[in-house]
Each structure stands twice: as C-alpha cells, then as structure tokens.
Image (tube, rainbow, N blue to C red):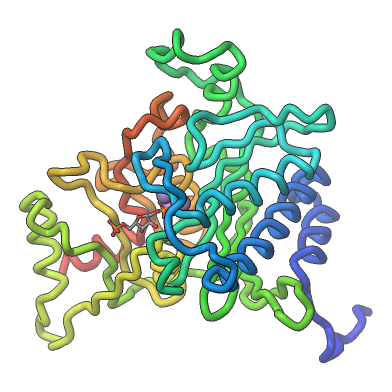
Length: 349
Ligand code: AHG
Ligand code: MN
Ligand code: MN
Ligand code: MN
C-alpha cells in the first residue's frame, strides 16, 4: 500500500529529475546536465535580482553576432550558463546566442550532450527590472545533418563538426525548458512527457514542483505581438490583427499583452492561452526570434502542452536549421511560436 502523502512533502526539481531517471525517461547523464542548468538559472536569478545594486545594469560595449548591443548581464549570464554546463562533465558541445559559433567542451572530463541556450532573454527589459528569462534545448550528437558549406573556408574542421551537430531540427530535442525571472522565479521543463513548472523557493533555495502536466487552454483571448511593426507587416497579417480587435457578436475583442521578453510572453500564453508571435516584416525578413535558441525549444514546450508552434506555414520543429543559424551570422529566422490552434479557430469564426 503506498504511503500516505504528508502535508510537509515537497517535490524538488532534483527529486523529480531522479524520479524520471529511475523511470527510465532520461539517463543519468541527462539528469546531471539538467541539474547543472537549474544551478545556472539560480545563479542568474540572483544576478538579475541584484543587478542595480552590483552595477550590472547597462551595456557591455560589444555587439554580438546577432548584431545586438550586448548588455552586461547578457555577457555575465552567458558565462554562468557556460561554466555550469562545462563543469557538469556531461556536455560535448554548447551553442549560445551570445557566441559566434558552437564550441566543443574542451575539458578532458566531458560528455556527449549538445546544449543550445539563450542565457538571458528579454535583456532589453533588464534595466527596468521587468521580467527576463533563460531558454535551453538539449540534443544527442548527430553528425548526419546536411549543412551547406559556404563557411567551409572560414571555420576550422572542429568548428564545422560542432556546427553540423548543432544543426538539428527541433524534432530531435530530448529536453527543453526555460527559467523566468519575474515576481517568482519559475523553471519550466519538458523531457518529452508533458510540461512541468517549478518555483524557486527563496527559503530553501530549491525549485519546488508547482504545476504538473500543464496544458495550454484551448481558447485564449490574449494576443501578444509587437504591434509597433504593424505598418511593416504584409496585408494578410494586418487583416488578421484587425480581426483580433473586432469585438464581434460577443462584444469582446482579444486583449493585447506584450512584455518584449519571449519567456514572459510565452509563459503567460502557456497558462492563459492565446497567441504569441514575432512575424516577419519588411525590415526583418525572417522575424526576430532565433530558430535554434528560441523558436525550437519553445515550440517543443508548446507542443508538449497541446499547442502549436508554426512559422505561419510549417511546423517549427520540422525546420532544419542552416549553417548560418548555427554559426550565427546576423541572419534571423521567422517565428510564430504560439498556439496556432487558436489562430485557426479565430479565422474560422
Ligand atoms: P534577447 O533579449 O535574448 O536578445 O531576445 C530578444 C527577443 C525576445 O525576448 C523578445 O520577444 C523580442 O526580442 C522582443 O523584440 P522587440 O523589442 O522587437 O519587440
Ligand atoms: Mn540578445
Ligand atoms: Mn532571446
Ligand atoms: Mn538573449
């Protein structure tokens, strides 16, 4: 007979990961990688919280390969994330939004897992203490990916190997998640069996399970787009936006909510339903979000929660990243990582 649950019983992320390992859903190596990521997130949470006190607001003075001015916290968070992954001894290649190319973990004590991450998402919000986050995705090695080799002369053979391994469609993801630094620090994860959320308990310094098997509401009434780009959108999208604002017979149009932090906007969409998108416009031909570090992990999570991630035509998880994306030239990718089901429902009305 199973032991009755005590009211003092809490499920920590570490305990939950071990349970998944015992059940054979993930192996011991992946458990270690995931707990090293949770450690990085705790560290970043504390850095973000104290940013104004410890002189970590403002810009670093460098431009990353995405063409963005790096914030001090972009650089520090990247270092924290990368250090935690390296010292886990279980990662082979890491690829970050803030780095030019994916890099092999050179430590003699290393592993196989490939981790892609956005160490600090929404960093434009940081100086105003508005929500930010970190995003990650984990793959197994796979050197069968075909990439076009325009960069062959520029990259060393080792760099090429890393690029090839990172160029995997989101469908190959073994795990993905994000941590949101907001009024609570929330760690959301999927290992391909539903979506789970853990809240950082400041008393214990531990992530504690707060939501199990999250499903996105089937019909949401919130849309989340940067409408400042409206005039640069194509006519079809403008029309769609106008429809969202039409009160219709119910007399209630959709509500607009936009933070400008993918993690925050995505988390709200996951819990309240609706649609999030960063579509292409006449200026950014492929939208703004990055397939590897943002769209693919978020699409894996939203699908695990019963929603859809689409670029407007194709399922995001089916898209094969190109070498440009992995060896990040400033080229960017389209995204509509949101709940396309709601998108379609609305259209048919
Ligand atoms: P990052 O801070 O990691 O560079 O990502 C920024 C992204 C994403 O967080 C957000 O949804 C989007 O950029 C906001 O873009 P706009 O400021 O153009 O709305
Ligand atoms: Mn950035
Ligand atoms: Mn980002
Ligand atoms: Mn970022």
